[in-house]
Image (cartoon, rainbow, N blue to C red):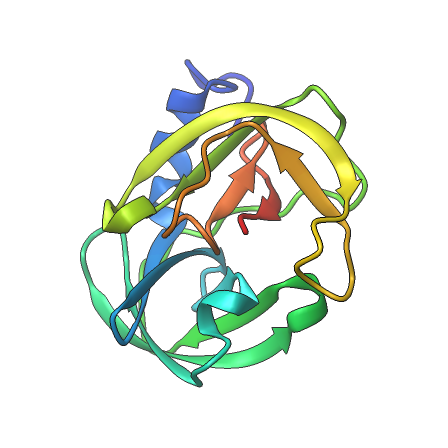
Length: 168
């Protein structure tokens, strides 16, 4: 996102610009979210979304259904990487610099809560380095943006349109 683009720096502009980078991940009867971070077909998601499988179905924002496979896992950080092959025209979301998140900054969550694809919520970062008792390594961002079942694995973004976290 360029600062010269009208409406940038707002939740609306972020949702429009990066909505195409958000995917729905389907596992059996379950649904989670993910974010394309490399246009070659690499997707970040939450490990707990794909913990019990090696293959998933990825539904893109333009309603393509693609087979995906889990290629990397970090249960201690609740992160996983899913790869889809042969998909063209994917939009990738940029990743923020590590350590750049500040308490009080605006946070925008995109995902598929309750299976409703392309949902957006916004709030602020309430705390950084928060322990939640759900993973071996605890270094979570806390936000008051609504995170519901199905949002897990989707991106938490700053007003620059950069991924600052993956929703858990």
